[in-house]
Image 1 (cartoon, rainbow, N blue to C red):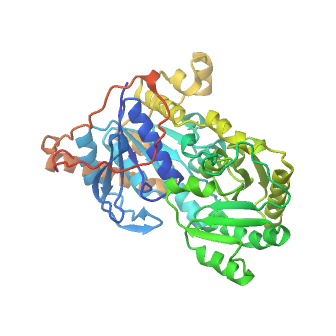
Image 2 (cartoon, one colour):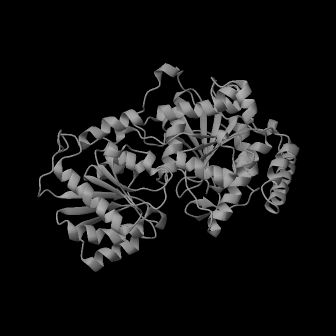
Image 3 (cartoon, rainbow, N blue to C red):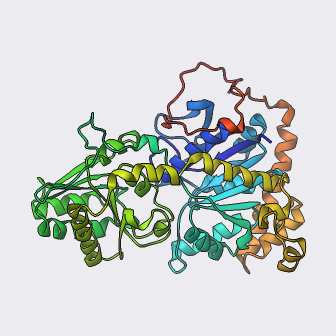
Length: 490
């Protein structure tokens, strides 16, 4: 059954990142499977209004004020008129929000429930429980997820974290990992100067690649401390570092202080389509992150034939098999030691990195991610029965009754208020007020801006695609489709 789906998040292209790539790839594959998908995000420099990307994917860039790291300023209600207009124009049935820190995501789910739409939330991050920022984020997440139909997490560690933070029933949370388009992350071919059976000699230079946002949570401080020690121990090693962020100045100062300009190359920000060209210059990919729900970049690195050194945090241990990775504690000494072990392993020829690409291609597929996400849509829309969706078709009704079956959330305002009221002594009352005001605003908009006055957007023409024809899209990079369109048809 085809659905009309709206993906909503503050994080989308042209900003690079794992969430942005996930939304784009998932949307493209859902379109391939016959669904209609639009994306709602905020305006970026040079990108406002409506854009069409590859495969007819429509993106609404809403003009809202950005306050920090591409996150819009929270107003709770000002987004509702624009959101309602888009939802009605596109005849949306399911609203799918992404990322805990996305303000547009939280507001969209609240407004969608007020409008009587099914909602799904995907969590891409891990958060703590002690610091002030985490406490506020977790309380906001509990507000949003108390009235959502289903939750998706990108790893089992992420699921455990989200269930604890939002006090959810684990049966209402599914694990659907990220993926990569393996064809876009191929090892260096013979024509490009590569080798079919690469072997390192004792005096060959080993290149370590790092591609990351240069923020504290990405382990940049750990990287800054480890690089001089790694280079002092191993003379035939060099670094290539790509990325930008507030820690870039600290990295540059470390290089100047230790006179490492000839052995550490800083590339600055790179476009996503250039990531593969950077990765194939190296032999080892170093990922010193302090927290990570999944870590798509390490899958991309392994697909390019790099041996991965990464910290054992969050969902990273779930991502790749042991023969592709060397794990370290998120500590300076252990990261240096793990990098040394990886260098020794490569020089001894103990790992066949040229086989990684085909192995990763078998493990991860966006088509599989789209199929599993589609099953979530079937479950919340009623196409699948509760037992089939939550517990599996083989589960007996008596067992599920004894366990206490979860159900799809209903839209009655009184039931929604009961769920919000249970979110805390003071926060619960505040959440109920927000839900009531949102409902009154919805009634006001229905009277003052009737649906009959809103033009219905024309769908992007597409050929019929059967489920059996699903294949990986080799060219997965988002590109704007040059097409003239009137304001009415957008």
